[in-house]
Amino acid sequence: MDRQRDVGVLLFEGFETLDVMGPVELFGMHPDAFSVHFVAEDSGNVASAQGQKVVAERSLGGDDHYDIVLVPGGQGTRRAILNPAILNWITRMAEESEVLTAVCTGSALLAKAGVLDRMRATSNKMSFAWVKEQGPGVNWIDQARWVEDGKVFTSSGVSAGMDMTLAVISRLLGEDAAEDAALRAEYTWHRDAQHDPFAAAAGLV
Image (tube, rainbow, N blue to C red; front, top):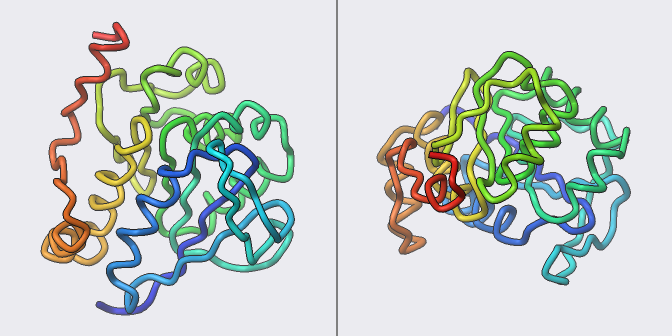
């Protein structure tokens, strides 16, 4: 490990709980390598789509730097895509971060902010039509567990964010570190980024 990286996790009302907590659990398996921070438009409690409240200790208006940025999905993305503060923050983070990630319909926020134009990306297959409307200039991949394009990682729905996060850890720390995180979480890592049975279930392939 060369240094500890700061991970900025975006929260907004109605975010999907596992989109956030799955990746956070895995990053947390290597505390010397990753320091996780919750960020929202205003600091304080933010309710997930499932009703749990998570404390955002930082606000979008701060000048904090994040090496890795995680944008979750969830029902709240339908409102968040209309929030200039969120979109402007994503645009800034796309320029400043080492790695930019989105889970599930979080890729709709990246697309709406314009940071996915002419890039390959994927999203939750059950909401794929709506997500694609947010970024007509994006090369949307219908069948993928997650997609890597340069420093940007996007995943399919909910649990796919954990596989994507392990891919991020593998890139930054090596495959052994990703395997160690999965083992300690007792999680079966789907290593094949093209393994996406939910695309067929959604009628996309």
